Length: 418
Image 1: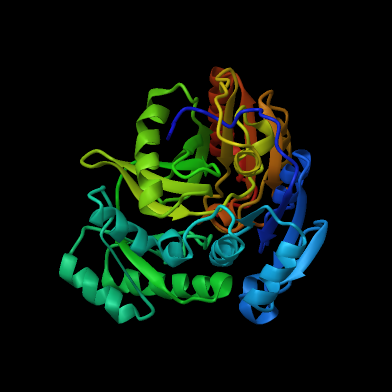
Image 2 (image 1 turned 90 degrees about the vertical axis):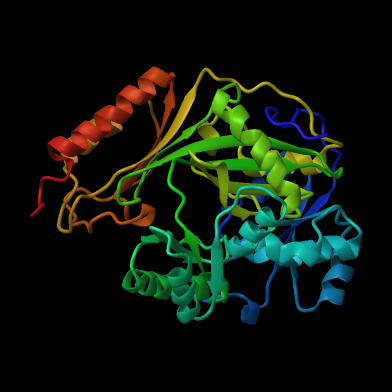
């Protein structure tokens, strides 16, 4: 019973208790959305020795209770004692444990025997290839010589180097030469160790074409899936994030990508819960999966989207008796825009920044760098001097986006540029 263009219905949820495993960096999103549905939230925290450096100082959200995971039997006993009805991953760190806990508690969940398929980019690509679905040739290893040997064998025009774990947020690098692959491999290895504790790095053929983020949710009944949202992502020639646009559910591209996403989910063993698929559209092959994450994440654009946020969609799917139909409004466009400093030493001009802040479609400023403060050249999304959300009529949003780019060209960064 897979459906593409639907969103979760407004059916009344049955009150219960959800255990959110390792909700580090979710900004209390799971607590907020499950609480709105009348559910209690229990946090399952990981012991310090299992938390990688990036999360050792992270605080657990203020859920109604906390269970420190010190052993599988103890955790299962404590969660059963609290009457937990669902277990979900609050981050990439929680995917494996959430799978095992759901299985041991007899609750809806994904097979713990296939967790690695939902977390490793290269294994995801291999699983799709084995199922006859277009995929990206890949290799993963903890040794850069393996990657170089593979690249020498396949001889693609260019490659993407990234942490093998799909939950790592460090930007993948596009490479062409052995020296570039080696440098990018070392950066990805450090990022993977810091964020997940694993040093595995993947090298893939670079798939040209636009990329899309496909949000899916799966209900408590096996085979019940839907695509809740799709974001079209644009990047510059140097692979820096430009803008992300929410697609209308009625758009032809939404309906073209949705069937592919629904074919991918069972291959990755995603039967229950949320997933986010990064898909490239290749002229020769059509849609191709680049990576998948089997958990829901918050976005600063959630409150300004005509469709429900990913965490909210997953929460509603987990707390109702099934996935229902709901129409998605196409009246309001939503766009997330990143500024890009052209060189080291630039600084934002205060007057022009105020002009951007006064744009009629500006709904939310995610962040702006301080005017006059020297900037570094924007190399990735994290180093952008500003991110903002535009909403409104599609034409007005597009006009304001073009105005932002025009303001950048005429002097937004002119103060101290070399």
